[in-house]
Amino acid sequence: MEAVSVLVFLAVFLTALGLTEAGSSDRRLVMTRIKRIASRDAGKEEPTAARQRAELWRRLLTWAGGLSLARRLGRLADKKLEEADVLLRGGEFIVIVLACAVATSLVAFTITLNPAGSLVLGLTAAAMPFVALDAARAKRLASFNAQIGDALTITANSLRSGFSFLQSMDMVRKELPDPIKKEFTRTIKEISLGTPTEEALENMARRVNSEDLDLVVTAVLIQKQVGGNLAEVLDNIAETVRDRMRIKREIRTLTAQGRISGLIIGLLPLILGGFMMVVRPSYVMELFSSRAGWTMLTLAVTGELTGLLIIRKIVDIRF
Picture 1 (cartoon, one colour):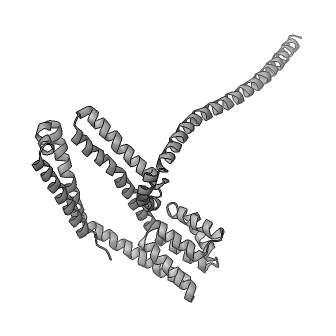
Picture 2 (cartoon, rainbow, N blue to C red; picture 1 turned 60 degrees about the vertical axis):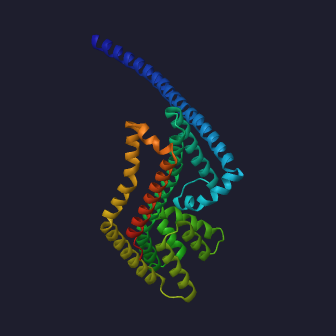
Picture 3 (spheres, rainbow, N blue to C red; picture 1 turned 90 degrees about the vertical axis):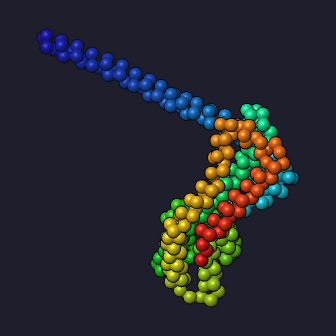
């Protein structure tokens, strides 16, 4: 009898515990969903405010870049911006350059109260965006050239497998990463929208501005006019491109000493001038307070630029 009572008690207790646990699990599930939605909404609010601020700055930059003077000056930078894959118009880039120059000059003048030194720092800051743009352009071009050999091999193998030229380009787009993926994607879209294949390929060659790609596009256009085995032509071009890349690496290794010499020649006067400006500003300011000082500065800058150009001409071997 006692055993029956204990069993009944345990059954009632476990039933009540199960019902309580079921209700609490439903509540926990609801609370978990509420917290998840709330955290998701909260996460959306912060980026929304950030996006609004970014959009405000973007509209301001677009308005400033659309001014007549900025737009005219920006035409000089449009081609490099396209080659570097920088999503800015030329006028917007010019506005950024001017903003860097003005901000640097004002900060330097506030700290040093030196108009000449502030102007020099402002001009240096204005040159930095162009240096960064050239570096981004050179880096993207080097990455693109390094992928051309693999792209040609994939295209040739796809053509041998029975794919069309457009399908082979799509295979390259799927197999290789940026930057060649982005350029091939854009070219395929142009062809899909009705642009002739020849014109789309020429547009890609003009955007990238690569000598190796120009060679490829020229060979493809000639093959389309006269006929022949395109896969074999692409294999030969791929071998030529790889040989060019190997020779370029060897030349870069052999000219490393000259390039380092040019770098030292270019940076040493700036480092020395900055050190003297910090240690003894009055000694350096004599250059900016007399006609002889300005003459010496002009001759020094001219000599530096001439030396850099000569060294660059020596180490820049074209073939």
